[in-house]
Length: 383
Length: 211
Image 1 (cartoon, rainbow over the protein chains, first blue to last red):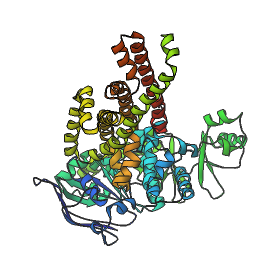
Image 2 (cartoon, chains in turn brown, yellow):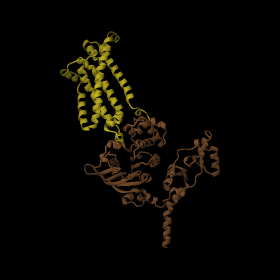
Image 3 (spheres, one colour):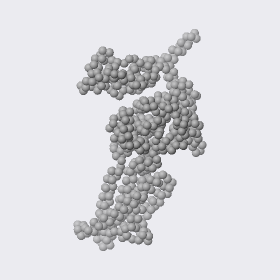
């Protein structure tokens, strides 16, 4: 979809911010540009929407040379999420979300529809549309920042360290959110970051840059298992190299069958099921086994006097992982958020299984003794 | 003092009105010229320096001297007074427009441009709305200045409340001096009050909400 050929940016005085960059990005890919500051990653990104003009080389999107396009209309067709959130403080959330549609002169109805539809995607209530950015938390603001980049249905979205200013937990939530949105909406995303964890977690392919040059452009797995040179090895950090080695286990290998209850059941049913199955958490599913929420013993006690239906009492905003996720990632999430367990769903959001804290033990075992087991068995063979 | 008011009620109304419209026209001209000029200057920083220094030099000229200098060119009366006062309103408005626009967060301007705003759209959708509080405080400052300086305009036959003060000085009538001065002050306070209201209305709502 996007192709950069021999692209260089040379500033006055001969400093090469980007030096002969050649990459090709497929439609629907999530690509991270990563590097230290001064590596040229942001310059590379900004050349794509012509906020910076390349000195040499060509950038094409779907075969069209960007330098031949009108920069203003080009920018309206590419979503852009910036570092400092950058919501307009004098505009309501609605006006902020529909900024690009406004530039494209959409009708008011169409803009309103878009805003109302989009805000649902990021789990914020409709009445937030009429608030101002200052009334939202940093994390909520950046969700709106992401929506703004989607509002005109842009296929290509550029993100310039979008979560740099957020606290770790908020950042984690937003990472999940944009990965989910990107997959669901089939967007092509180019993402600048200096955080290797973020890049590994989100990107389909990572482009490691140093002094304006692309050092390695490959999938996270390939980079971790075959770093191109010492710079890459150092950059990704030895702890990650080791961590990724022993277990390429995915959640599907270890997940257990969760105890579920269907939406229309009553609270009494829920309590009976918990007692019978000896669990404190039930996952609420609909007729097609789609995960709708969870209900735990504390939630039950609190909701018992207010309602008698599971669908009213359940916790709707829950964390989950997709099947095929690396076990390590899900365990990391359990630990980070202090969850008891985390459900595994498929692409249609159907509940497949459950990863629990017990699986952490496996990881710890693998990490600490996994290597030793190998070396011990090697020694035995030598003897 | 009561005598001053009762004996001169017609003149008070007439002079106050004169004073008001001399000031208002000068201020309006100042706004019409200085705000767009300030916007243009932010796009040409080098010229901005020159223009801003010229206007601050003009500002330092004694107002009486400017008024007197107008006489050979445009004679006496209201027109030269308005021209002289207009020159005085320029600097505070120009300065504040320039500073207000320049102080708009660069990230926001960059955000606007990278969303696909044209330069002109960026000025009207981002820069001006965010700079309004600063621009308005320049206008308020100018208004107060211009009302107090308009007193001197009486010296070149422009009329206004200055007439009372100069008459009082010539005729040794303290009532006229004090009465005139109080009226000028009241007018300035009133203008300040009304412009503060306008500023409040003109400031985008999102900038007024506390967290």
